[in-house]
Amino acid sequence: MKGRKPDAKAVRRKRTPQAMKAEIIEPRQLGIAKPASIAANPDLSAIWDSIVGEGIAYKEQDAPLLEQLVFLHDIVRSCRARMTDQDGRTLMTVVGVGEVGPDGKHKRYVPNPYYKQMLDATNMILRLSDQLGCTPLARARIGITETATQSMQVDIAQRIRQIVAEGGR
Image 1 (tube, rainbow, N blue to C red):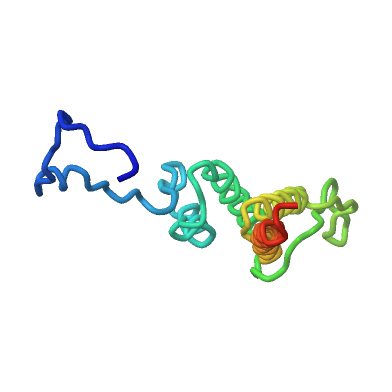
Image 2: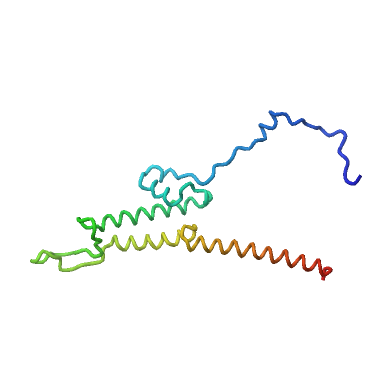
């Protein structure tokens, strides 16, 4: 018989039910936990739930980026609320400044500062969403990368089989 023989003096332990229970590993929590700063605010918590959901697709290292993404969404929401006119429908992209003329209108208008803040936050949201795989294009790109990696592994395995079949040349 080939191989090493078992040591006669080795300590052997029986696998009792108590020992087997001790070996059971508790399943780790799937997904990432909602940060306390977000859980404390109901608006931020709702945004987190709509973006992250159960968080199964993310790792703990993604939490700061996801937290930033949630804050940016809240900035966009609050800017939009401040830009809405009294009727609730009109977005004011310019605001009147300075003196009011005899007709009741301002003489000078400037771009609404909330509009600029909203655009900046939206651009950051798009960048972070792309990094975290939250957009359809990012998810498709990730799928393409996985497919290319699997394809490359299959090609390597086929090439090795071909070399072995040809006699190792």
